[in-house]
Image (tube, rainbow, N blue to C red):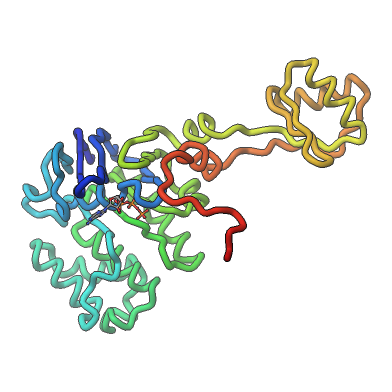
Length: 304
Ligand SMILES: Nc1ncnc2c1ncn2[C@@H]1O[C@H](COP(=O)(O)OP(=O)(O)OP(=O)(O)O)[C@@H](O)[C@H]1O
């Protein structure tokens, strides 16, 4: 479990992390989301003892990172997959990590197998592709078989097979009862990986809830309808207290389920050509919640 209490980091006038409290629970994947500059990396760096909080604290298994006797056995991390000596082989890199934390050498082959790098284990890391480097970073995170795993953008640069593999791995680690804390800007990927979300904006927590609650609280689903007599249908649905908007040849309706709308139309003798529940996405919810926290906005159409 990772616990933050009034965790704060300032850089001059910038409050990168602004007195946040949270607990990342074991047994599930917790997604860590926020626009650029929201404070995600700074938070992760403080969890891992790479940055010192200005005030407040963050602990793993009840202790600050620097007080953990064998940190790699307590918390594994992927922060910068390319922070590996380019002249060192993958195997040597992992051996060095194992030796520094009293981890048995047989674990090196186990994690190389786990991430699928056995065949290139004796190649220099400097020659690795982005995806191979990412896999080596994940192997390093898992070398101590830690109960807590912190991954910053783990699918960055991976191909679809690699992305699916990381997703399965994170879900397996969580199912084994580990704490899995992962940041990503890929909303579609996060939506199918994380069960719980911690969302930050401008150094503050904007949401700490389940994925399902986050989407239903911050983005609205609606029913899309195509019907030859859409004017009459819109009138009927409005009389039934539905919220109806017209978008081209479609009606977008909120306030009744698709089945209820179908029944109402049927009893009024109105034909329907399409009746579809359009579920809102994590991306919709994220954009709604973080609209005011975005550091840099692009101006649509301003290309010159
Ligand atoms: N070493 C530093 N010196 C000065 N300011 C910093 C430093 N590190 C981070 N910041 C500032 O702190 C804020 C939070 O940055 P951070 O990198 O934690 O955000 P992030 O959510 O990880 O962003 P991204 O999604 O772009 O990686 C930003 O305003 C950033 O400019």
